[in-house]
Image (cartoon, rainbow, N blue to C red; front, side):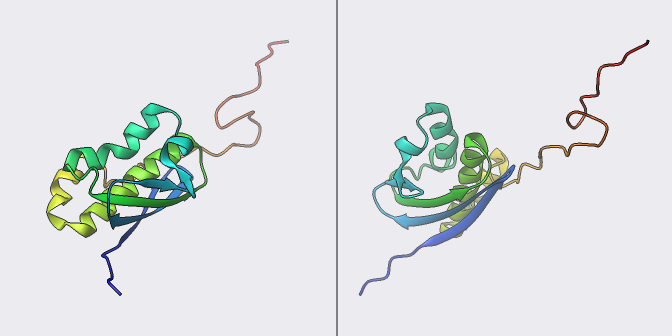
Length: 131
Protein backbone atom coordinates (compact mmCIF):
# COMPACT_ATOMS: atom_id res chain seq x y z
CA UNK A 1 0.00 0.00 0.00
CA UNK A 2 1.44 3.36 -1.05
CA UNK A 3 0.45 6.27 1.14
CA UNK A 4 0.22 9.60 -0.63
CA UNK A 5 0.76 12.76 1.32
CA UNK A 6 -2.44 14.51 2.36
CA UNK A 7 -2.68 18.05 3.64
CA UNK A 8 -5.68 19.05 5.78
CA UNK A 9 -6.64 22.61 6.64
CA UNK A 10 -9.64 24.61 7.82
CA UNK A 11 -10.76 27.93 6.39
CA UNK A 12 -13.38 30.29 7.78
CA UNK A 13 -15.19 33.38 6.55
CA UNK A 14 -18.33 34.98 8.03
CA UNK A 15 -20.40 31.95 9.19
CA UNK A 16 -18.90 29.51 6.66
CA UNK A 17 -16.41 26.78 7.57
CA UNK A 18 -14.50 24.78 4.95
CA UNK A 19 -12.48 21.64 5.67
CA UNK A 20 -10.04 21.25 2.81
CA UNK A 21 -7.98 18.22 1.87
CA UNK A 22 -5.17 18.50 -0.69
CA UNK A 23 -3.98 15.30 -2.34
CA UNK A 24 -1.27 15.21 -5.03
CA UNK A 25 -3.17 14.61 -8.27
CA UNK A 26 -4.42 16.12 -11.50
CA UNK A 27 -6.41 19.15 -10.32
CA UNK A 28 -9.89 17.68 -9.71
CA UNK A 29 -11.97 19.66 -7.22
CA UNK A 30 -14.90 18.15 -5.34
CA UNK A 31 -17.01 20.25 -2.96
CA UNK A 32 -19.58 18.47 -0.76
CA UNK A 33 -19.52 15.41 -3.06
CA UNK A 34 -20.34 17.60 -6.09
CA UNK A 35 -18.26 18.87 -8.99
CA UNK A 36 -16.62 22.26 -8.46
CA UNK A 37 -18.51 23.80 -11.42
CA UNK A 38 -21.85 22.51 -10.10
CA UNK A 39 -21.29 23.80 -6.57
CA UNK A 40 -20.06 27.24 -7.73
CA UNK A 41 -21.86 27.99 -11.02
CA UNK A 42 -20.79 31.64 -10.69
CA UNK A 43 -17.41 32.13 -12.40
CA UNK A 44 -16.37 34.88 -9.95
CA UNK A 45 -16.71 32.53 -6.97
CA UNK A 46 -14.66 29.88 -8.77
CA UNK A 47 -11.91 32.46 -9.39
CA UNK A 48 -11.92 33.40 -5.68
CA UNK A 49 -11.46 29.75 -4.70
CA UNK A 50 -8.62 29.24 -7.21
CA UNK A 51 -6.63 32.39 -6.27
CA UNK A 52 -4.08 30.66 -3.98
CA UNK A 53 -3.39 27.96 -6.59
CA UNK A 54 -2.95 30.53 -9.37
CA UNK A 55 -0.68 32.72 -7.23
CA UNK A 56 1.64 29.87 -6.27
CA UNK A 57 1.53 28.12 -9.65
CA UNK A 58 0.25 24.86 -8.17
CA UNK A 59 -2.87 24.59 -10.36
CA UNK A 60 -3.29 21.02 -11.56
CA UNK A 61 -0.81 19.57 -9.06
CA UNK A 62 -3.35 18.77 -6.33
CA UNK A 63 -6.80 17.22 -6.15
CA UNK A 64 -8.96 19.17 -3.71
CA UNK A 65 -11.70 17.58 -1.64
CA UNK A 66 -13.67 20.03 0.47
CA UNK A 67 -16.55 19.89 2.95
CA UNK A 68 -18.11 23.29 3.45
CA UNK A 69 -21.10 24.34 5.55
CA UNK A 70 -22.67 27.48 6.95
CA UNK A 71 -22.92 30.95 5.52
CA UNK A 72 -23.72 31.84 1.92
CA UNK A 73 -21.96 31.27 -1.38
CA UNK A 74 -19.52 34.18 -0.98
CA UNK A 75 -18.57 33.16 2.56
CA UNK A 76 -18.10 29.56 1.48
CA UNK A 77 -15.86 30.59 -1.43
CA UNK A 78 -13.76 32.75 0.92
CA UNK A 79 -13.54 29.94 3.46
CA UNK A 80 -12.37 27.53 0.77
CA UNK A 81 -9.75 30.01 -0.41
CA UNK A 82 -8.35 30.30 3.11
CA UNK A 83 -8.40 26.52 3.60
CA UNK A 84 -6.58 25.90 0.32
CA UNK A 85 -3.97 28.54 1.19
CA UNK A 86 -3.36 26.98 4.63
CA UNK A 87 -3.08 23.49 3.12
CA UNK A 88 -0.60 24.77 0.51
CA UNK A 89 1.57 26.17 3.31
CA UNK A 90 1.53 22.75 4.99
CA UNK A 91 2.58 21.12 1.72
CA UNK A 92 5.38 23.65 1.10
CA UNK A 93 6.34 26.16 3.85
CA UNK A 94 8.25 28.27 1.29
CA UNK A 95 4.91 29.44 -0.15
CA UNK A 96 3.93 31.15 3.11
CA UNK A 97 5.38 34.66 2.48
CA UNK A 98 3.74 34.86 -0.94
CA UNK A 99 0.32 33.76 0.34
CA UNK A 100 0.56 35.96 3.44
CA UNK A 101 1.43 39.02 1.31
CA UNK A 102 -1.66 38.39 -0.81
CA UNK A 103 -3.78 38.16 2.37
CA UNK A 104 -5.03 34.59 1.83
CA UNK A 105 -3.87 33.40 5.25
CA UNK A 106 -5.64 36.18 7.16
CA UNK A 107 -9.09 35.47 8.60
CA UNK A 108 -11.53 38.15 7.42
CA UNK A 109 -12.97 39.40 10.75
CA UNK A 110 -16.09 41.05 9.31
CA UNK A 111 -19.24 39.46 10.71
CA UNK A 112 -22.90 40.36 10.72
CA UNK A 113 -23.69 42.83 13.49
CA UNK A 114 -26.24 41.64 16.03
CA UNK A 115 -29.76 43.07 16.18
CA UNK A 116 -30.44 45.48 19.06
CA UNK A 117 -33.73 45.78 20.92
CA UNK A 118 -35.91 48.72 19.93
CA UNK A 119 -34.51 48.64 16.38
CA UNK A 120 -35.68 46.80 13.26
CA UNK A 121 -32.20 45.50 12.39
CA UNK A 122 -28.72 46.15 13.78
CA UNK A 123 -28.94 49.90 13.13
CA UNK A 124 -32.25 50.55 11.34
CA UNK A 125 -34.48 52.51 13.73
CA UNK A 126 -38.25 52.88 13.53
CA UNK A 127 -39.45 55.93 11.60
CA UNK A 128 -39.37 59.07 13.73
CA UNK A 129 -42.74 60.72 14.22
CA UNK A 130 -42.81 64.31 15.41
CA UNK A 131 -46.55 64.27 16.22
